[in-house]
Image 1 (tube, rainbow, N blue to C red):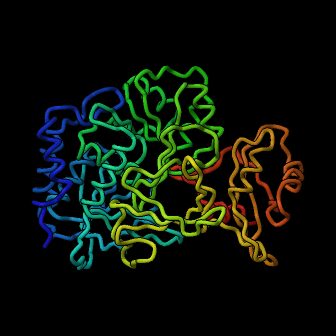
Image 2: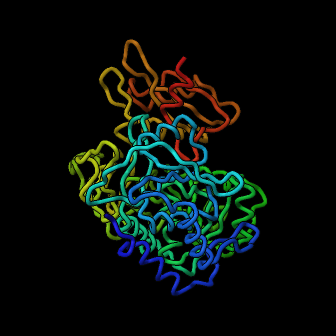
Image 3: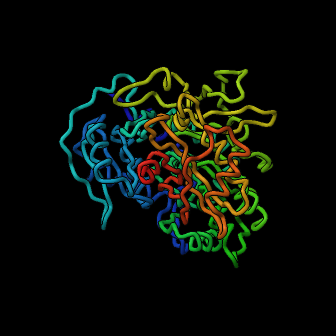
Length: 463
């Protein structure tokens, strides 16, 4: 049976308590201290006794409380009870949530509508074997069906170490937490650094860009782990506040458009550092210098991570990530060729250069037009070169004669016409790459993680 006494995350937490027990750990956006580190410890002990007391080692506990100040304490309580935490996003659809709970054999779900409350669930006991996880990260992978990724404390601690040491994040910083703590990005950059390194955070639940920017200014946050959608909105605002303490802007969750990064630097005199990672292995690459020269540039591997090119002579290739932070595998069905034994093979297509790596597409996003493969990123790049086009996403639609056909959604200024765009593309792309249809939208829809779901766009614009 797994024992909490030797857990590496709990050991790091005990070190944090010894250093900064009475120091502020969590602020709200008004500057009020919601929790000290000692408060988190006392809260965790309470949850351990009163909320989780009757569960057995290895039981899965789903946690769906959003960016709530109780999140660190709940994770600690699960660690102490040798339970497996399953964070769920607040915005997950009810049907998807129920499928995830069933697939992961969750014994209970914790929510926080008014107070932190637990609801027991019918479940089957899981035999985890020798490597019982402490955390399951939910992911859809390359299919619509949810599955989970198994992590032990050692892997989560390795990810935190690689991120903080590569990015230079220390306990003297103040993280601004608006990205979901339930997501891999929020867990790695916010929650685990707080527990294991004593990095405090401002907890925000307001996703309105103007409010976020004002809160960044008056809370004196020094590190902002954000997403491209926030930076784009900030760059388009008038009368922006001064951000005297903000020293590090990080972008992850989706590719950062080069034009957005340039506009932000011009407006705020600060660079955005692209961070490339995955739920399966945490951080992979980080753009340390932010030269803003190439679309999709994500820099060099994080300290402690290594990348092997699977096709070294190809213009773009998948890579094999070697990292102590890589998860033990998928659950319930493993895929050992893709994830396990300290390696992970993403579906992204990367191009290696002297200064680092560029992401140029994904295997799963390739569009099959009568046997010819179209990389959506290449078509998007051409659409963005047309004057007046501010954003573009390319996706596949079903085609009776050609298997799939290329379509696009764009955000553009007045006067941009579909016929002119198509003529522009015909002059710069191969015939099978040219979109059959271009749809004009007010904004490109993204999910809570800031990612575009091409599958959903294909369903929405299928006729």
